[in-house]
Length: 89
Image: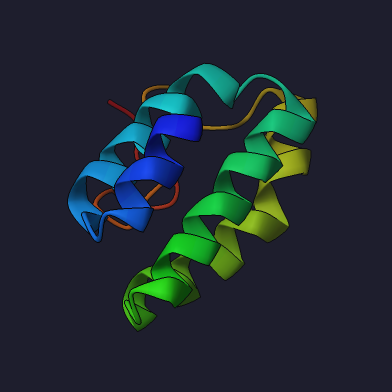
C-alpha cells in the first residue's frame, strides 16, 4: 500500500493501481484489509479522475466485507475494473 502511495504521488497511475491489485490478492480473505484496498483504489481513481474505476470501486466496497466473511470473494480477482466483479482467475 505504501509503494502505491509513492507511485500515486509521482503521478504514475498504472503502477499505483498494479500495486494495489497485488495487495488485493493478499487481502481478499480478510474483511477489513479487503475493504481497505478497495478504499485505496477508490481514492486513486478519484485522484486521477478515472470515473469508470471510481464507480466500479463503489460497487466493490459494498461487497468487500460480505465477500470476505462468506468466502465468496472470487479467487484471483485483482479487484480493479480490469476484471469483472465476480470474475475468477
